[in-house]
Length: 333
Image (cartoon, rainbow, N blue to C red; front, top):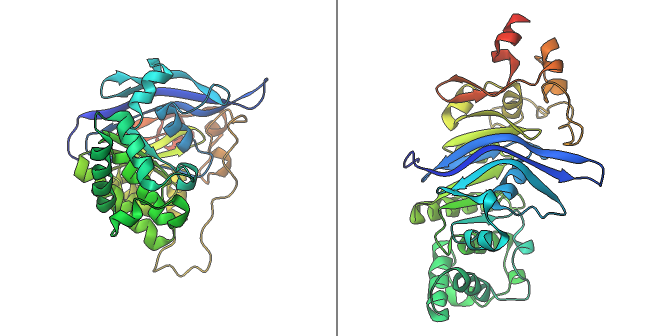
């Protein structure tokens, strides 16, 4: 699945906070570092409130000054430092060099404009092509994402399409200018299982067609198993585990990852009820002093309540943030 080791995206020590009020801030992304290689699909997985979407919005520079800000760190796309760009400069990067698909396409598509008009407008803005050329390209893209009656689809309004078809339109728009990076934020959340599978197939097809890289955000480990080359597990704003997909499923190390695995439904399970992780993700403005998963973890030691462990490379680029793998934690067993 992975094509090369050339890094398309590099995120280094990213910190992003949101404003709660004039007095306090919430640390939504806390010292997050990772990369995405050319032709690779990387999945960020975790429960709601873990910082997945905040990370994606930070990369896209879509957090408004009223909502919050990136306080430190580096975001490099194809050698270009995004945190130093003006809003106007970022406007040229978004849609052209990287694009994003959101959970609910109805909030991203203009309800009063036809599908074709929205696609053409996007291409004319970013590409040096005529409106006629853009219309032809729009038809080609709609065919690529699975529309059969192209001439009918291009003249439809968003409300005339199903949720799955609207999401396909969003994928077509996102890929219209051949971006190097596609960020997909829970693109299948509101869809039924069959439609989810079709949408994921479309994303993979477009990735291969345009030789792009994908950063996919999800809470569904089943999706991760199907599409990811590497997996990043986030919890309470931090990365707690990162490795290649096969390694994660064969040998999960962090207790949170293990708990997520146990929560997955399986066909051969005899249990009537699914396993649930006790407790909830701590709010970003009330993070504990020590390990952020300690209150929900079955392996908690004294040190876990006092010190938040570093992200360690345990073996062969398998990174884990857990005292079970630190010298201090082993000494306290």
